[in-house]
Amino acid sequence: MRYVSTRGASPDVSFQEAVLNGLAPDGGLYLPTADGRRLTEGEAGWEAWLRQYSGFDAEDAFAFPLEAIRLDERTWVLELFHGPTAAFKDFGARFMARVLPHCHRGNAPLTLLTATSGDTGAAVAQGFHGVPGVRVFVLYPKGRVSAMQEAQFATLGGNITALEVDGSFDDCQRLVKAAFADADLTGRLTLTSANSINIARLLPQATYYFRALELTGMRGAETAFVVPSGNFGNLTAGVLAARDAFPEAAFLAATNANDVVPAYLAGAGYEPRASVATLSNAMDVGAPSNFERLHRLFDGDDARLRAFLGGAGIDDADTRAEIRLTYDRFGYAADPHTATGLAAWRRLRDTPRYAGRTGIVLATAHPAKFMDVMESVLPGVVRLPDRLAERMRHPIRSIRIPAAFEALSGVVVSGSGS
Ligand SMILES: *Cc1c(COP(=O)(O)O)cnc(C)c1O
Image (cartoon, rainbow, N blue to C red; front, side, top):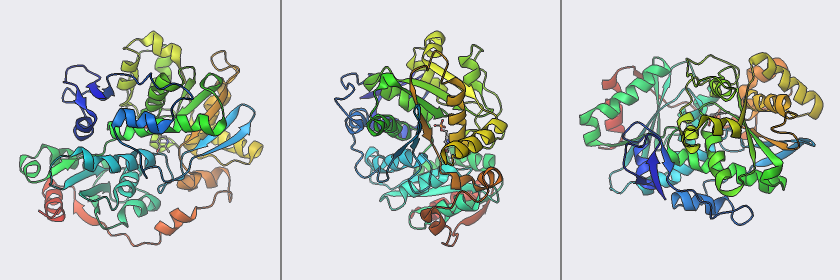
């Protein structure tokens, strides 16, 4: 399978090159050139799909279960949070960790730099922990990540080094960008990143949708996938899978108050803006990077995209109300991200677009990751899973650095064994 840029001004590349490049040279995002329509519903599962697109087997990348739970006759939740960091990003990060060493032809070890505001660093660190030939540096802003997040990436040791930066998340991102732009550093080390726009993090997410149909025993034509969305990577992966294997499935994009895409789907122009902080903070994105992919998948045709996809923006008050309602009715504690999906489904399930369909709401994080919100809405209900509690008992081993490039490059050069 070859990959092309959404902007059409870069040469097409192999999967391996797309993974190493991250972003295409023209600034666009990579998309597969052809579709895999040879795979039809019932004929092939997610393993064959992923192999066709990437050339790789998922092997042990998905070593944790998915669970589908029925709430009412027209609503399921698909739990994607049984991985090490209790959020669905574990799937993409683990798959990327398995394939990245094979994408890189040279013998020199890879040095992976990632700036995080919390969750991405956790998934990347856990995914790459112990992977030979890759040394990972996670940069995070001092005092601005939760204790649980910090435990996920700063207690591992081995090939994972956590750098506690005296500054903001923006400072961390600036340092990473400076490293990639520094000729001395890039001459000495093979630098790479694990951005969420990387095709190796996007593709494995398609497997959720195949698995959802397997687990619920439904066909595409009977279902609506409801996807809590921020950067829209998860939803874009679902659209890719559906195009090949279950084209009659419907989709619903749920966002929080950062509702640029729902507003566009309702007929407004596409107008990215600064994000606002909400309870579902992993979805606080005002300029969703994968919109460019989604738009290209519909040949840039707004009318077709609007005909295909519904959307709803759910504010914090409605998110809290949904958490309460879902617990009272079904005894199910949904985290704030999942709750935006449940609320979007409740709002739109009886509209013509979705009438007669059963919603499969993607549950993107374990509620224990958002204990403060859960405690304020459902006191005493959620308990911390053992695997998260266990991680928090390990000592933090991060290296503290000022928000200065020289400090970063010093640690990275000595810590990468060169
Ligand atoms: C990242 C994330 C999302 C949003 O996923 P996108 O692919 O960015 O749309 C939703 N929920 C949780 C818990 C996340 O971590």
